[in-house]
Image (cartoon, rainbow over the protein chains, first blue to last red):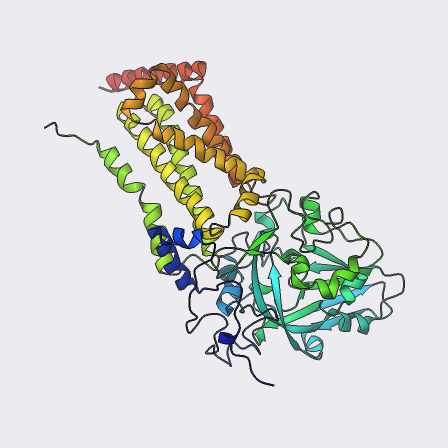
Length: 322
Length: 214
């Protein structure tokens, strides 16, 4: 197969490194951008080495099989992905999570999988390593209207569920993050939330091939700030559905109530599918800021995975089932 | 030519108000703003605008409590610099975040309550900045003081704008709202009279103590 070089792909949007962004901000302050705005085009900047999507990216560490996602949009840098995180168990400050999570012990981890299954199992990290690990380049769209493109490593959740043999009556999967009140400062700092962090999926969503248990990114093991050692990745839903640092998975009959559904039932629903048509009550979901870019891009239905997942919701009113 | 004399507090203020911008620009050059530079720059300039506005509102009550009139000279510059930061905040929103995408801006700005409140706050500050000159003060006479009471509304709306943007469980905006309301309360005539009487009584008490000690 012929390798497509990034220069051949013309992304609709301009992507910039932070320094490029800085330069453009300088241009902007000079007023030159006002001219660019008049003809309706974002400024065009040429690709420079070190930019996301650049072929000179270190092929070994960190590594990804491609510089772009299937839409031709460049990957975010390892640095951005590992230094801009929502992980309230550590702090609500996205920039500070990496520092607070540094060195968080995840080597002796276990995930209990039970509930309505024939074969309840506790998976050790070695057990998880026995699954065939593959790379998946997914867009991650945060409910706060920013997004990244991330090369995850992991395996479909369906493979893990197959091992425990769900009973026929199981209709939902309930996930729980570690509730380590000693090791993570967020629990005492934010008593407002009903800890632990809980998320849920409908059985068909959980069994969907796009739904991933991720154990790494950019070819490396996950760092604590990204939800080490194992987390969920559901790319067509807002980021908060992709629960981090999972310790417990239960198959149940009742729809799990997530932490965010508890905190603000009118704002965060069970489904939380990325949907530009259904706004957050307080802000628009019609556009998003791709980290590293200037300006905004329009948010895609189901985050661009409509072909794969729209059928799961046929006949449902997505404004009601938000 | 009349030489203008600055009170040391004025000098500190005129220098101090530039520090947040200097830090922001420094962090920008040092790549210290995290992955989402636009968000960080927006948040910081907005926060600075709020803090300066609250400081401006705090001047009158604090000068009443301390009985120190030179403080009043800081009220106008603090308000004006608050407007400057609010303008940068707005410019980043329009020009960098949304890159002049008028369709998206219209949707974000005119249909969402947090944005409408933010825009209203900015417009109040704009009117107050324009009419902050001696000329306007003379022209508007009594109505000038009435008009400039809108600074309290701007302060309150700024905290509402803040509160509507954060997730549930984040308390900081509500603290700022409380501060603005306390500052407003301090201007209510009975409260002000009470403050003055407590001040003069404690001053005379202090005076007596000192004389007795001698």
